[in-house]
Length: 397
Image (cartoon, rainbow, N blue to C red; front, top):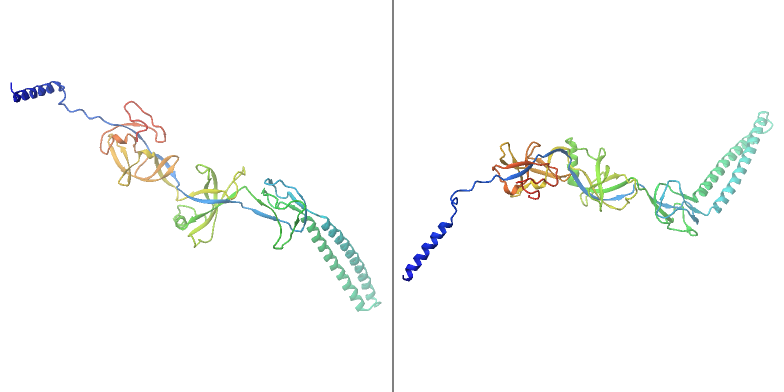
């Protein structure tokens, strides 16, 4: 057998061997499988979107404590950094010179009252003598004027005594408000300058802590939008009444502090196009302090009806958001949607869905518009989806 015959022989043997290995049913088409998906109905909810701003906490009442009288500090009564109540004694200035002034003016007032009493008696006797022509009219009028002068001298002496008594009272420096006090800027033995002079001595500061203000700047576009919504009756403007607000410090998650916006400034700052607003937040545990950075959010639009779905149910098609729903015949339907913010871990859908729709929340990789699927129900709010036999995994997007 020559070389050509050998090649033909081995080729025919190989073809026969391959034909013998083919399974008997290889020529039949496999039946298509129906994909299993998890579906859930959207959760209906009244939604109020929030706008977020940044601000700083401030105290409603801040006092720079200065002495009303001058003198040497005799004693510091407060503990630095502690809370004080209105009327608490904080510092004492040396009272001895002021007490001496009060004693002297008490004596002057007593002498003035004695002179006034004597002048009144002479004026009364002069009235009787003038009636009988025993004294001249000039003498009578002189005694009357002398009595009046003595009465005015009493008033002046008593006023001087009251002023000196106030100075003596001001030697005890008391807290004008309740709050947390700073450190003592001067200690016992130091001379302090009081009164209304420009170089008066700063003794300490006090800030109130409950409630606290939070000042923030809202941009002009937001301010115009809020006022337009107020005209349309969809949202109350903080210009006319308090609106709810929520606040969080720099290390806090969410917005745990609830308060109100009670003030909006009367003009927009032309330098940066913002308007100043103020929130009021309770601080019963006194843990927040003026100066802290804070995040504030306020209602952005009026309340509206929407539905909530999981973010994993949302897909994109050239920048357009959509979901797949399942109709009564278990066929998938393409639904374009318009979304909003997150609420309780779910996405707000403003347009495109109703609470009666069945949305595919898992198994999207095996589903496409217009195909028949095997839907299995799940809760839209469930964070971990159940896995049933033949169903897609909970982690499947």
